[in-house]
Image (tube, rainbow over all chains, first blue to last red; front, side, top):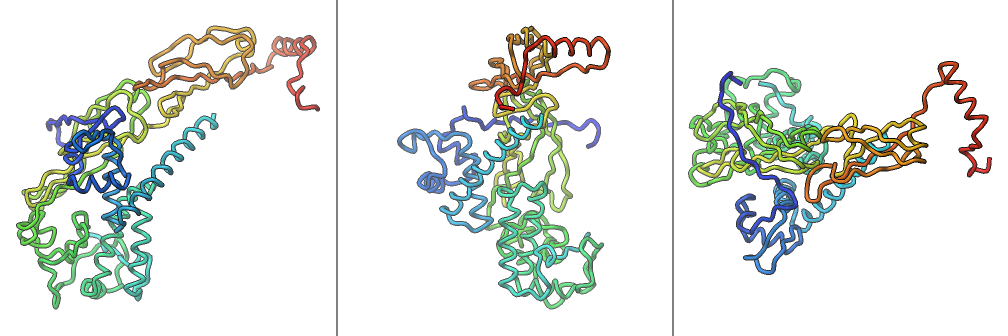
Length: 109
Length: 322
């Protein structure tokens, strides 16, 4: 990095539970069309609050799930059911790994 | 430029059939998919496997690759032999549909022929591609190690992000740029921060992708974390545990005095409400008592222990029937 180079400041958005995205915001953030999002909602991959698409609010982890499912579908040629099952299992594995890590840390005293 | 042994990467022999290659690819793609694998270099391996399959699944490319000969070792310095491409025309059609933006220089030298015009369009296989497709840039992901102190207080970090060449800059080399990012207080393990428009460049006038920072909490020497709760093992003297005491203990927000109730045993958990990671709701800190006995390494210390042994009716194994 050359000396004196300007460092750009980037405004980040923390994807945590308190955030709620509209359908338009989710489409914008993911680069997906609304129809693709409808499909993922129908398959229970992401679960919005609110009755109609206009009122839908997605928790921030919807963005992560949606992007993971899309990558799995494209990269591994999975259909939506397969990708939905994969992400359920992956998230369970992740939660269990974190639990194991926390318990190991506590036991390792 | 280094020679890549595509057969070795897929774990198949040079005589492998098309089906064997496909099976090996599918298995490895699942194994190293960055969303599935926990291995640190999974993304790199996944790309390598995809690149190998791109070449070996295509009879024409495979034949050309095989003609280079088996004499090279993986990683060996390599430059294409004179007259390379003789009899084949990869120009404008080097890629058959895989996401080729991350293929190696080795691949591009052999099969990415039409790069003369430069730009991402050419990198995807020819000028026709560039004019007929717009493509959003790739989202990039970076793991950011964050200490518990930073997670508690929040922090500003300068990241050095690896950037691929932009479509307008032709074949410029990848470079690193510095980016200043705020890590908000209360981030937890695995949480993501999205930086819109800071990812890979788009192609054909497409938008830039996003950059996702993934928080990786660094293990702490004193504190352990369970979600937002912080655990601290606190050593106490036997008399502090037996008689009760007020003792200092570290927290992520500094030193506090903790009241040890009389009659405490090892493993007793004391809760310091709201002293965990901030959030909604904030976590708590748990102080887990750990009774530490002083060594009997002087006459006086030994005399004290001996007096306790004589005068205290205490059998720690009373419940064991032994």
